[in-house]
Image (cartoon, helix red, strand yellow):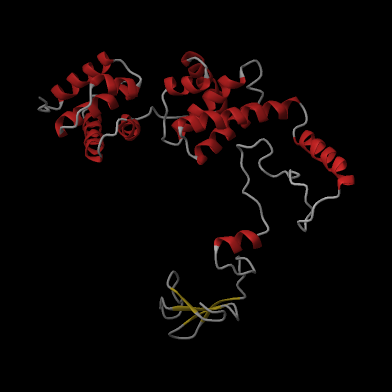
Length: 309
C-alpha cells in the first residue's frame, strides 16, 4: 500500500450512522466514515517506526532497540557489553597501540556487570535455572516465570541457608505446574541432582512464603508428553484424554497419582486402538512402577466397563 492511500477499518462503527466502513487517511491522521463523512478520530499518533523495511535484513539493520527485558538473565538483559572484535564503529581495525586499553575495558566491563555476592549468586542461580529448564524442554515463558519466582524468593531472603540448586529446582517445578506444563519430581530431580524429598520440601516452603496456590495437576496434562515420548498416535492420545475426563466425572481418580493414571489411560487407549506398547515402557516413561500401571488399568477398565482384551 502506498503512502497516503486510505485504509478501510471494520473494527469500529460510526456513531452517527452505525456504518462499519471507516476510512483512515494517514496524511491527515483522520478516521472518518465513508457513508456520511463524519470524522470519528483525528490527530492520531502513529506508534510504528518512522522507517520502512521490506525484508527482515533491512528491519534488523534499521531497528535501534535491543532484545526485550528478561528476568532469566541476571542483569535482565539491559546491560551493554564490549564485543570481542577489534573493530571500531565504522568497521575499521583498532590500532595496535589501543588494543591493551580496549582489553582492560572489556575486563572491567565484565567485572562491573556482576558486583557483590548477591548478584553473583543470582547469576549462578539463573544459569542453573536455564540449564534445568532446557533439559526439561520448558518454553521461554515458563523459564521467565521460574526466574521471577526465584527472584522474589531471593529478595525475601528465602534462599539463605538453602542450596541454590534446590531452590532453583523448586522454582522450575512450581513454574511448570503454574503454567499447566507439569514435570514430575523424578524428572526435575534427574536434571538438578537434588533429591525428590528436598525439591518437594522447597516447593512447599516457596508456595507458603510467596502465597502461591496451585491445584493438583490433572492426568490429562501429562498424557500429550508421555504419548509423544512413546511415539503413540494422536488417536491414542485423544482417547486417553477422553478416558481421563470420564474417570474424573465418576470420581475414579480422586487421590490417585496423576502420572499413574495418565500411564494407565495411555495403555488402555493403545490396547483399544491396537498400537503395541508394553506396560514396562509406559511405566518407565511416567516414572511409576508396573504394579501402579496394572492396578490403575484394572480399576478403570472395571469401573468404566471397557472391553479390553
